[in-house]
Image 1 (cartoon, helix red, strand yellow):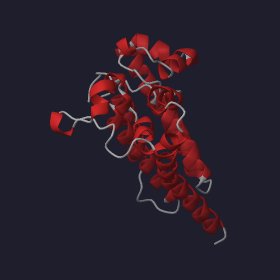
Image 2 (cartoon, helix red, strand yellow):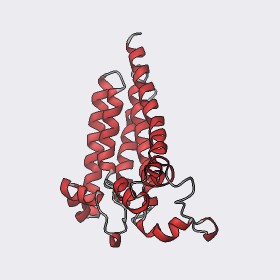
Image 3 (cartoon, one colour):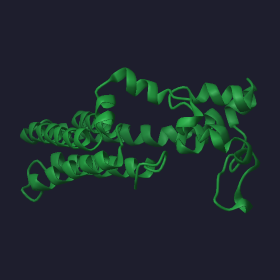
Length: 222
């Protein structure tokens, strides 16, 4: 937890999981009074406050996307409207907190072109050597050089591993660790397992989504 470059990736994922679970549970229990609205408010507001202090700007975009996905796979109820209002309230609180703590970051959050520039950033001096948007094409140029086999299967498991111990540090990371590709899951996976590994990893998420949609259809038919 902090504001050092690259340190809040796991925290960002954790906040997404917590909020997705809270929203989905609140909406799923439409016929129960066991899930109190206060719990959802506390979860969303606290998550945005943590994101503000930790300077996780992209979480302000991620929660609306999470809410949209949850709404697509659940039956519309009065709680649906309540969840939208709660998320909007939490977003406003989080934006206010970010504006008070880090005015420059708040202005950047309100500027779509500035957010895109940060996501596309490849300036090593700022801490991101690999672009978040064009990582695959950069990796192709740096490591694969249009070799089809490397694009498909990568350099192998562990080939891009970083470690605080030199014993487990891969030769590739010794040379190119300054690019900070390990800050991002998919670029690291692409280097090691190629498109095949990335697709298989993505299928786990896709199958989960399809399963949820299937359950939604079955639920509507009851």
